[in-house]
Image (cartoon, rainbow, N blue to C red; front, side, top):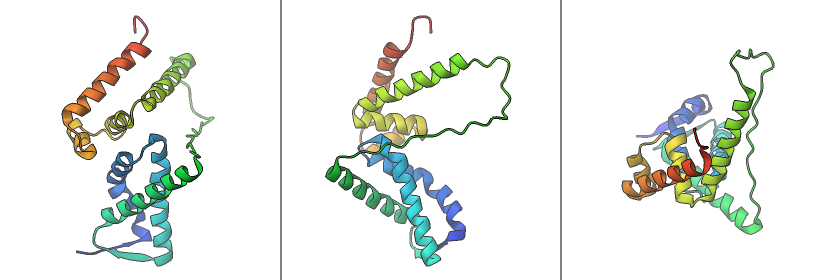
Length: 179
């Protein structure tokens, strides 16, 4: 059964296909830092196509978007290979001046927490790519261990081993005595 997609339906298409597309990109990249850029460029390309053609008749919308993502990944890594130039996406947080600060707010705790989180993420990114993907899928996508195993074509026991061993390493390296 074919489905006609249009620019007006873009938001719903995005919402319906986001998680599967994100999983596909995570599982098929060799650098976790590239995930957001590839995801964004996949949906930008879909949006541009819909803007030009007004509507597209498809058998399977998810497969079509995965196809766009696959091409984006191939193109991205061929450019990196050619030029050896990796671009990192920097998240910019917008701060609202008019926010009320609670009385029990501690800037030191926030800074320390962000600093530790950044150090932990850098540590995880230095691990093998499979471990990094497992952490991303488990904590960001909130997938179950069995789902991660299926997505990455490995055993659930392998997923557990990588996850729990790395968690133990993190506890040893980042927890202070008494924490």
